[in-house]
Image (spheres, rainbow, N blue to C red):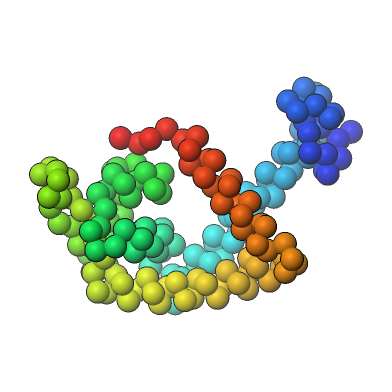
Length: 176
């Protein structure tokens, strides 16, 4: 039987060839580790997203788009870039930006480099909202994400997450 600390495929092989039963599959070290990562991410997203909704009146996804636009600066971003950054369909990002525009968080302007394209920019209300939400988010990240970890592991953990995030992003096909 595989132990949950086993980093290989359950039987010491990298490919998991030793998984032959449901019990072995359920107790495979890599399967368990990824399940814990996914479970922690889902629970943290729920906890942190609820706090942003309750305290700032926006969804976690809206907050993430506001952050993306904040990184882009005054130039704004094409809808396609927002979709790629958040792994959304262009239709999904259009509906989201429609709601954000109706709430006064963003505006859409003509893209000077593409007559058919539109650039999305933060409004003053969007700027105020993302700052307020980021303060709430930062405190909750500290409380629920960092405080449970030993202080000596926190920086390395953040670096490892950055590595995983970039590797996953680079493995995705580019959306059109």
